[in-house]
Image 1 (cartoon, one colour):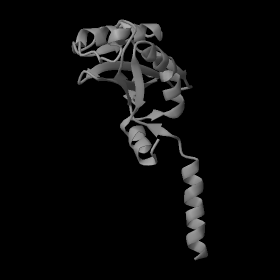
Image 2: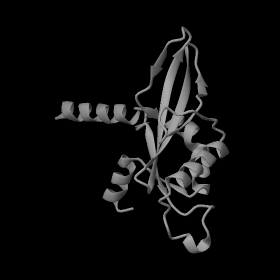
Image 3: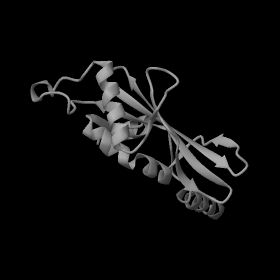
Amino acid sequence: MMRLLSVMALLILISGCSPRLSPLYRDYEVTAGETQSETDAAIIPDDHAEVMVRIRAALEAAGWQVSEAVTPNVIAVASRKFREWGIYSIEVDLEVAPVGGNYVRLFVHPYRIYFTGSKRKIPYLRGSLARSVLKDLHEAFAEQGLEHIGTAQTRDRRALLGD
């Protein structure tokens, strides 16, 4: 019995020290923006071109330089360096795509760039890096009528807790 309690205490201690990881995307809901009149405020825009303009404006307002995307339905930005460690630095690319007319998904692509020049994708987003990358984006997207609704995990958690 004592051994079981010791193991459980150790597991709780270890889990409390683990880093907080999150998915490599964030979702936003398209709501009425600056470009619509007050009478149209309740109408969610279904015009793909308008949503793309709002995304581009939000990215530029947050200080990201918009670049050429691989596909026409996505807006991409130039890489930005966020961390400089001894043997590697961390750079982040972003892609933003409208999803189904009423939602927008922001994809975050973090990479480790080693001093040798090799590049490796980071398969998760640590809390500190997420805060650094997303802090200006949430405000800029909100100003353009794109409300942050989180990830599938956060939406599920809110639904379970009744928030």
